Length: 511
Image (tube, rainbow, N blue to C red; front, side, top):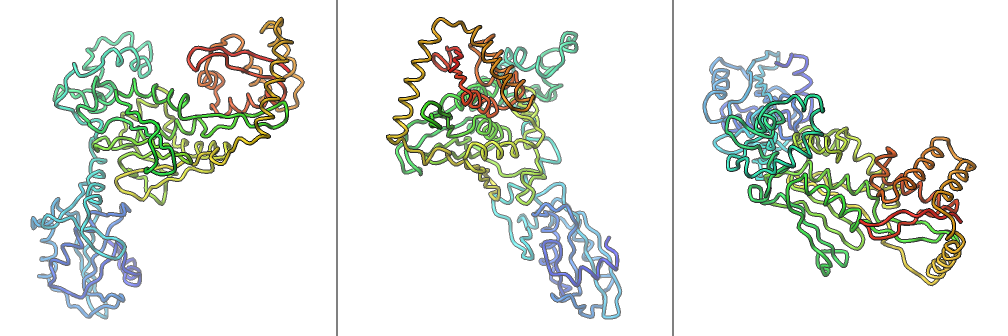
């Protein structure tokens, strides 16, 4: 309970979501609504609320003479059955020269929403009101945060036959369990899955996390569990639709498809001349940043919703929207410094499979990459209760292909053909050695020089390696690989991809 000194401070402060003052001693509806609202703690402050009886709005005492009957009546509110679940509260009377003050201290409930006569009362600033449908859903979500999360809930309609057990055994288990432990594990598949919170032995059924990760048809049980991509030929939804795709399936199969789609279809590059003979590649969106934003949407979305994740591409921007606003400890005032996990099992699996880092560094790195690429920082809509939205501007939206650009590209092509003739009798091994020698003469930090040498060696040894694998083996981001390749181009080293996106090989040319 609050001390007398703390109480004097509460009297002098303005009314807020934690304080309500009244001179009435008989308005039980008002008392009950205040206690209900403090229990719900809509701002999620996790601090007690105080109903001060015997004080005016300005904080002056009204001269109340508190009786035992008043204290008994207030204490009876707790178990009277009209506020459910029962509030956690205490009642105490303080004596002052100007009069008595009856204080009802109410702790935030761990089981919201708390209702008075079936209605959910909340405080918005100093004002008391009834919760909207969306606000009540947010309180329900907080309640689940104290207990089992949705992804650990048993999907009692499903059986083992609804799961792709091969994907579980071959693709996930080796990533989740160390080889020594896995080789000596004699448990059944159900017991293995239960240990990873993917199966509920009590109800003998998979959890929703298992359905989402390994289900043969996840959208049968969760209709909104898919990703809707739409490309508009303009700046708003009224524009013609150029393309639309519904990405469906379990996450172990869906994530690689989304990864490839971002690389092959969403990300576009175009040459921008920096001299008559040299050019740089300009990306509309940086690969790693867009991948991270999509993985965040998949990881943090509310899978109880029937609304799919929306990936909408316009001529000037990309918008990614997922059901479910900020969750748990994450709130608009502390985003993105504070993070919380609506789907901890799915988050854990995505980390083990290498799709997310789960160290709350993702957003900061996204903003860095977007800024370096010329997109500007992503814009996050975090004040909505039911949805989370991020918008990324197209870095190339103002580019135009003028005559000068076309002429310079043509000159570059002529120069390339000349070099092609000169190098036709030169083996890739000889070119590699020349390039490595050139890198040794470059004035740059030794760490960068060593990375460029490793890049050239990898491409020479594995000419069919893709950019994502290059980034992984070098231990850097895709954006860093792109910058390194551009640096080599500026020094006259051309790294050319010969063939289609899936079947091709690198060719090294030296001007």
